[in-house]
Image: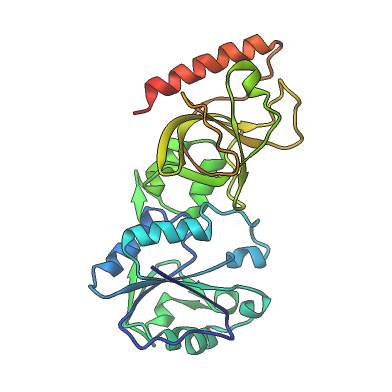
Length: 298
């Protein structure tokens, strides 16, 4: 898949067949996947155009936390069969671009045969343009919002579920487990002292942070998948921290992976983070968590 970075003053021109999907696509959830798969069904090369920063962040409507990084999106889109990912730099200048300027300066140079958008798609300064207005200039397919169990699938709803630790529901709406990616960095090695070594994750991106607690899931590194326990917390029993971190205990594993990239999938919430009076009590609980994780995951 080709990745094209550009800004409002340097828009690439296209003279080839292209079906274009428009949106921020945070999470690339099942609703987004439906839109993109409908575009792929047209039989032409498909491109996805998104921004490097959510417009709502610059407008002050939300913090800069997302379900997927740009790199995450690229991986998922390539697996789906998308041929081009257009990443437009979004800044204060872009905020001022009117709906008609966006059409003239961005969409017309890209020259799409057809455009796919969701029913809630907005563009231009203050979101003045919508899918219906876009139809005056292009062949546009408007894809309805999708539902699971009568619940509308939206990035906002998924972010709320992640923050509540409801990872099974998150997986239902995403179509896959919630994933974080980061670099394994040196910690204080406290876990090793009780035979539960952990990989401290320095996140690559400002992901939506899960609710504090212990989770079961999987760790991926070097194309290898292993069962794992994931702790999101301040480890109150040993040297309590001011803010939560993510520590991953990869089950039945003792290799050195410092400096390696580690992907972590959250499958389900096990329990809250407790403060234990004795280290032996903590170890006893971790043994129970590990056994539950081993028996519950495939």
